[in-house]
Length: 147
Image (cartoon, rainbow, N blue to C red):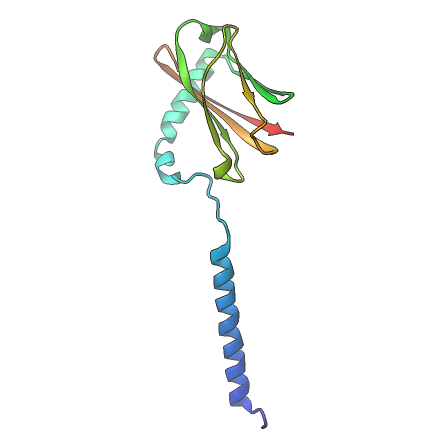
């Protein structure tokens, strides 16, 4: 049997269709991580975050964040020791939202909170602290590296 143009074109089309089918199959097997699962509702809340950051900037006080041994040490300014403080800390891993951790704020009498890093993967995290003190909301982000 001799190959003519008709068979050659049919073989090329057949190989193309099989190749495209294989690429579609592979693309459906890939894990896709967005920054957040609920990305769009968070964008609507963005102005509130800006207002919270402005509240912190107006006080000229910032949290001190350090990774010490196997702990993340968060130091709150003395101003926040009087009155009740509540909120949460988000350890945000940009590369995989499934590894994010949320922790409630629980400071000791010296204004320190320690967070163990033993359950965290090594790498880059954004520490996002969102808290309320005496009816005023504050927000601060710090980049940390877990070794």
